[in-house]
Image (cartoon, rainbow, N blue to C red):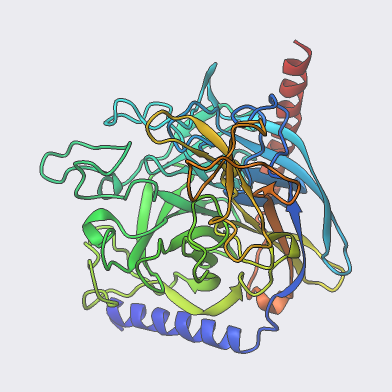
Length: 483
């Protein structure tokens, strides 16, 4: 049997396994949802830049430590204002019988640092160097070491940090992903100006997953690259497989989006086992800061990479839904979960714009699992692109289009407000308006919903390192608090 026949067999198996598995799924069941105040703060300061909580560019449940983590992105400035990037450890009450969630509480905030210098959400300057500019979008804990891996949109990059937030190393980004001018090779990490190849601005590594044994990390571009139809009709984006021991990329796989346009892209990647993943795919529609309400489309798919060829050396098509002969994309099953199907009264029964976090949580009494989905509320802040001045954005969720009737106020004040739709008209903030909340949805999934699920708990020898890392990080944080 030839290598080609082996690949065809693997591809057929992957497709059939997805179809067969999904034919018997009980389907995830929505349990409940909670909204989290847009004004809630972390343990640093009180203002929008220093203390407002960033919900949820990613979510992760660490089963070894039984801890929840929620990742903030580059901050409320959209890359124009200084913000020390961070991740939050939080607690959540979970009913072990039903999976219902309640009582969200931030218990720790870890800032990302390189020595004493912070990784900052400011866009790279000069634009051809990354420096410590950082836009975190994906987060996992390596079960082998207990260290954090965080994916970034600016590079796109994958960085490793210890549990106190100290930088350890950067994984090597494949050259074909670097945002650059293909003719000169000069990169521009701050925006698309001058770039003709590589990832699009603000659409770098959005999803990040870790294999159950911690050997491999998988980082996923949000949408097609510039030279692969990223600003047009491109349908294919890339999953990059990294060896966590060396930090080197060992393969790339092509993933086909449902469609191009409407800001279509992926927001999260979750490993089920070594070859099967959940992908959260969404458009930029729904209730959000600066968003068009229109038709929201937020879906989770079960995918399998076992039959996909490595496309590291292949230019993916800028249009069309097929790869060149001899190459097959990641096998993509039918829709696993429709995130728009269950909406909350607090948002006027409308879908949030940015579902970005997805995680498999603790076991439930019936042998199933809690699955948690979360939104990024953009800190409920917008900014003047010219001056960088920031404004709180307040919504009246009972309106047909809450953003169209929204009000903007200078940060942390209720005076000097104006209507978003017509900034020349002053507005009076009333009790029927509120900041955009963060949202968490709880789903109950059976073991059959997650075929072949393996928890990322690491090898026995590595668990001691995880525990030592936990104790050391907490000791360092207590020492800082006392100093």
